[in-house]
Image (tube, rainbow, N blue to C red):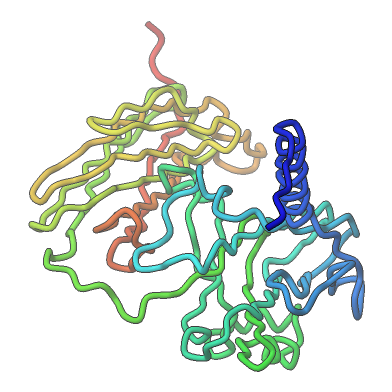
Length: 354
């Protein structure tokens, strides 16, 4: 029997080389892949593509205003550390998470990202695949949420065909033979390849019944006078809401002063005159209130020509959107949406001098 003796220093060096090689290999897989023009400037393909590897097969811009570098990276599950949990019932396929970045200027919402998934060998599993996109969502406590964007011809919006030829759109439906599946989104960023749930999850608790009562006071108001919007949310059902999220878009003739919720927290985007509140959970039969204080601008009324009488009043519209969920990871359900207007009438007279 032959015995080979290897020095400890040689063992350490060998181990370091192996680790270095493994690290280099892993890093190579994670390097961004540059996208280059394919059939047209609007349809991009990877500069180097291995059809036997999972990845992005092509990107189709709906409307390209200005060209710019575009690339994608396989970022894996580590990129989900700061992302909200996947929607209820969805599970990630392996670690197939990708990030797409572009400096191109695109001016339409129907951009298509096509994924190649040759690693999935079973047709029944392929049929369950769904593409999720992490989008900016002002009504989410995390400021972002997942949306399913899987391209399915039977659910196509007619407007998409103004930018993507119908034949092209239909050709990108999920195809097991080519292992291609596509998603259609406004913007890019993070995409996850997932398995969708087979059916809606069974719920033992009834859906929450959140109602809104909104008032504006005083009504009417005068220029330069403070105006208070009071929003009262009551869950009239017995099923709890995991979260209640609210957005009010204030009219430009109302200047924001303050906002105070009885629970949760609120913030205001001064540039857009938008107030957003995340109230958190709302139990059955419970209530929560948001108080928004504004000031009517003095410049509400433009001077009228001498031949016309000045307007006696102006109705200022403000829009409200409310989203509440039974479980925080659920998609938004139509039953969990409230759209409303709250108006403030401003009369054309100054408050009396003190």
